[in-house]
Length: 176
Length: 372
Image 1: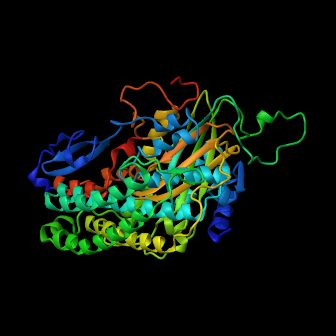
Image 2: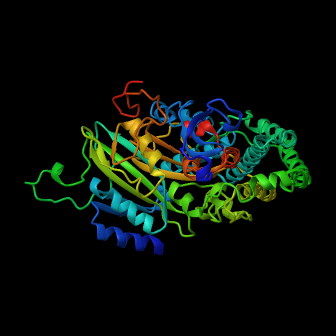
Image 3: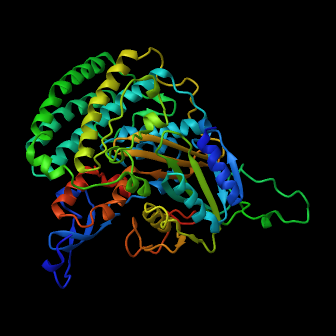
């Protein structure tokens, strides 16, 4: 694990993320896998910006029927009275995931994935376009495809879909 | 920007550049708000050839998606083939024979040369020079013939497989490639004499269209655009994959941040591609070109995987989510020119329209890859 990854881990632990996992780069293609709450995505972007990172892409994943593959779960409370659904950030079905791929263009390699789960019924989270200008188009595209609303985004009009599009093709219940 | 007293009422007008305009290289439309000849605001309008490749990825098997990867950037398709097979091989844990990796590098670099040659011709054509296009296409034709002989296609390659390549290269291909390297090396000085040292070219490009390293970072610009801003970042070096670590090549970097710098990066890259191909041909090991144990039906373990390669235009990233079945659950294609173009609005502000077109040309746009 590189120095940069260690520094970032400290930064993010101060933010108290829902989960933070070192991943095997060879197997996964990234080094750090961080899950944050929707309210934390801007802070996460600010950390990455401060460390000189660049935002490679923003995208969504629609978890309609299943909670999805999520090996990176924080030690779940074992006591029986607490419903697992109540655990903050624990992946459940009927959610959407927003994924931010960060990388740095310096010499040290440490790819970081920041994830965030939002309810499928009300997919909203703050925009990071104020931190990374490039997020503007990525978030517009994600809004096109998933209908995820990025609060505070300057213009969420369709980017790749027709200007009058009222559908979101990457939703799993969208019929081809 | 225009002197304020030239336009006391701050009158502006809107013009459309494209969607069918020779300088937009495909169907890109840019809504320009102009103050005379100066750009006040430029807003690219995308989506004219959006085909929803990402949804297609969720509706076919892993192998069936292979041809789609060639239809993103049709000028440098093999890099996209490479990126896709690499991430699936990572997910499914498939080992690729060394000979196959060498063949991949040779063909990808040939494809990169073809892509840069086409860009060179089209870029100079945008600036009003017709003849260099003919030189570039003449040379590019040789690359396409070589690639056709081994892959069976000239543009929309589907040559790589999970675990190798589908066809071994033969002796005529190797001798043909060596002859091409010799030929292009003898032609590159002509290119520079004809265009690079041309005073009109220099005046159009030098100190025009500045893109700072910081702007690249904020927008996620990569590839020659980033390297023309003085940042030495190339996935082949920074995140080594395939057999690139075994080959000796340099990453051209220019720190002038202008259109000329981006031009020079690509011209120098052609030279480096030739070096890579030459070494790869020298080192080409014997052996199989397909992994023997590569499964016919791919079912990567549950999880998500990321892979990035250096395409001709920058970082092509691909994020796949597998639910353990023979069909991808999610397929995110991160295309380099999408990010590179997103900075155009900011970079072109206050520029002369003619200079902005030179700037746009220096971004090396391929619209199908932006729209996906």
